[in-house]
Structures are given as C-alpha cells and as structure tokens.
Amino acid sequence: MLKPQIKALLENPPVGELVDARGWIKTRRDSGSVSFFELNDGSCLASLQVVAEKTLENFESEIRKITTGTSVYIQGRLVESPARGQSVELVARKIEIVGPADPETYPLQKKRHSFEFLRTIPQFRPRTNALAAVTRTRSVLSFAVHRFFMERGFFHVHTPIITTSDCEGAGEMFLVTTLEPGQVKDQDAFAEDFFGRRAGLTVSGQLQAEIYAQAMGRVYTFGPTFRAENSNTSRHLAEFWMVEPEMAFCDLRDDMDLAEECITVLINNVLAECEPELDLFNRFVAKGLVDRLTEIVARPFSRLSYTDAVDALLQSGRKFEYPVQWGIDLQSEHERFLCEEIIGGPVIVYDYPAEIKPFYMRMNDDGRTVAAMDILVPGIGELVGGSQREERYDKLTQRMDKAGLSREEYGWYLDLRRYGSTPHAGFGLGFERMVQLVTGMQNIREVIPFPRTPGSAPC
Ligand code: 4AD
Ligand code: MG
Image: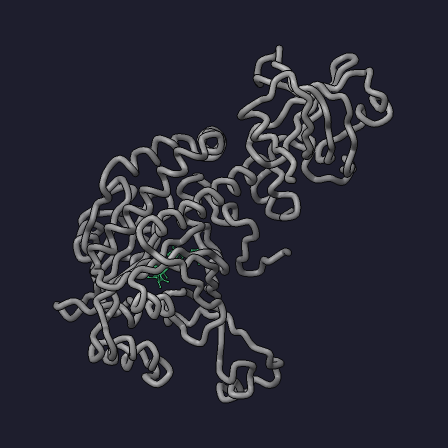
C-alpha cells in the first residue's frame, strides 16, 4: 500500500489521530525545549509543521541537529495548531533520520536562490518551492491535454521519435546514426547505416499523425520533439514537447476554433486545479498573472490576416530591429508588439505568404498565401503553429518539387492524396510555452525538468 501524503493530511486532517509522514525538512526552528520543523514531501506546496519536544529520546543526539534537506520519517498525533499560519500540526512521538544532508555542502540553504543558479543543480532543483510548483502545474496541464482531446473524440497516437522525414524542412534535425564520424564521407554513406538511410530525431509528429487522421478522423500526438536550432533564447529548447492534433474533414477555421478552445480550456483547468501554485507565481514570479489569465479566457481571441498584421505593424510607426515588409517571417519582436501593444491579448494570425511556410500547407486561391495560422500570446509570442494541409495531389507535388523534396521518398505522404484524400488540418502547441504562459516563468528552461539548450545537457 502507498503511504499517505502530506497533501491528504492537510486537506482532510484526521485531527486527534496518530499518523505518520515522511519527506524532506525545509527548515528547523528552535525555541527553548521545543523544535519546529517544516516537513515537505512534494505532494503540495504547503509543508506540515512538526513539533518535537525535549522528551523524545533522540532529541539532543539527533533531532536538534537535523538540517535542511534531511529526509525523515515521523510518527505523531495530528492536533489543531494553536499558532497562526497552519490549521494543524504534527506533535511528534518518534522522528527517524532517513538520509542526512550535510549543511556544509548541501547547496539549498537559503530561502530563495536564483533560477540561473538552480539550473546548475538539476539534481536538487525540484526541491525548491518554485520548481516543484511548476512541475505540479505542468503535470496538471499534461493530464488536461489528454482529457481535452479524449472528450472530443480524438485518439492518442504515438508517432515515432526516430524518423526519416523532415516535417518542417528547416534542416534542424539531429542525426541518428551508428556510423563513426570517419565513415560519413558523403550522403551515400547512410546506405550502410542502421536504418539503411539517413535518419534523425523528429521535429514534429505531424506527417505521421496525418496518416492516422486519414483513417481514424481525429487523432493527436503529444511527445518530445527535437530541433538543432542554435537559438539561445528564453523561448527555445533543443528538446521540447508538442501537442499536435490532426483532423480529417477539417478546414483552417475549424482548426483555429479548436486551438483557441484548447488554450482556453487548459488555462481554466489550471485556474481551477492549481490555486496554491498560481498564488505563489502571482506573488513571486509574475505579478498580476492570475488577472492576465482570467482576462485571456474571458474574451474570444482576435483574428487577423498576415497581410493586415503587416499593415498594422507598419502603421504603428514603431522602429523594429528587423524591418517589416510583406513577405517577411514575423520575428519575435513583431509578434510580441502585435499582441502586447496593438491587440492587447492573444491574436491568431492567418494566411501567411507561401514562400516562408513549409511545403505541406494548403495553397490559397490567391496563389501567394497558404492556409496557415499562428497563435501569438503576450509575453511569449508564438504559442501555436498550424495549418490546413494541401490535400490536392497536383498542388502538393508542385510545392514539393519547388522545395527539392523527393516524390519517391515522400511517396507514402503523397498516397494519402491519391487514395481517399480529405481536406484536413492540425496544429502544434508548444507545451513548454503553454507552461510558461500559465506560470509566468520568464525563461523556458524553468518549465521543463531537464532543459536541453546549445552547450547544455548536464544530466
Ligand atoms: O510552428 P511549428 O514549427 O509547427 C510545426 O512543427 C507543425 N508541424 C505543427 C503542426 O501543425 N502539427 O511548432 C509548433 C510550436 C510553436 O508554435 C512553438 O510553440 C513550439 O512548437 N516550438 C518550440 N518550443 C520550444 N522550443 C523550440 N525550439 C520550439 N520550436 C517550436
Ligand atoms: Mg511556427
């Protein structure tokens, strides 16, 4: 049987009963012949106050010497707390030290450490209130993602992590090979490789999700994706998680509606289920966070074509580092100015120039834009990227030829247009950026347990 957690003891306190608890000591405070401990087991933000009296047999020899980070087992009686700050406390009958933590070398001694410092100790980072709160919120969000799609008739499909197709075509794939560096003289060398051809870590599960959407109607994949892009920003990781639904018989408008609903429902879930965590973020990480989230879910998102977005940026008179003109890929400075200053909330930008978007997006009747959409949110910029897919065989092969993609290698993808093709659409929601949005964390490295960035993969 699993042992009870502190969360359960605090939510439904069996006052007067003998209980046991286990966890890590956050702080010890001594007052005369009594010691007080904050005991935390990670199950919730709150710690359990433990009272240890001199009468305990190992009081002087052990209890008085317990330091921050020590793991302990405690048995005692749960009583109503006479002091402010907690409703119940545990009066110890027995305290056993499970694993000591030498205060001379254990790094978490201060009440608050910088996030930069915490990144250097991934082995202890989740023992801090902030990182544990982020991790619980991320877990709630992850479950909410599955619930959202399951409730709407989607099937969860595990798309491959190792793949031989580059979905985004941006050349940012990590190579997967068993060849030694010296053996890779040219591209032909991969014929001798493990898979008999060049393979890499997936940048998106979309192309494979399309296969299943064209059989099962509504599917989604939610897994790790990898990009070897050398961007050291607060919004990019080399390994991140993406939520990617794909729907047959679906156009760009349905796609935008679903993405907007998804974001709104996810935020509402966090507002309802992560109150203590949000309160912590609201006070110490991002002031006004809860108000901002409440505002986001209160109104429909603005929608604006790329052409209108470019006009609005030009008319704003604002000088950007990267000048704006029709045809450019919007940069983070443009995206953020658009949603933070011009719109003042989330905005869906759609119908982008075909030139700057991948081959699979559906060509619009104007012949120069594609049925793409990005959702931009304040503080972050792009949260979602999606599109209606090109379902017409001839149009798709034209785009592929132009992009230099082999019709033979993508024969399986073209087959979906040859046999029982349907208008279909989907999107990718960057899961870490979603966690950033709801926690207010400035840097994406704080919202994933083990951030991988250029030059950094410590464990
Ligand atoms: O816009 P992207 O590149 O879209 C795709 O990969 C499509 N195939 C998705 C689809 O239609 N199924 O990426 C989608 C989202 C972005 O909007 C962003 O939130 C996130 O993934 N993202 C990253 N997050 C963290 N680090 C990175 N390096 C990211 N690159 C993209
Ligand atoms: Mg994108």
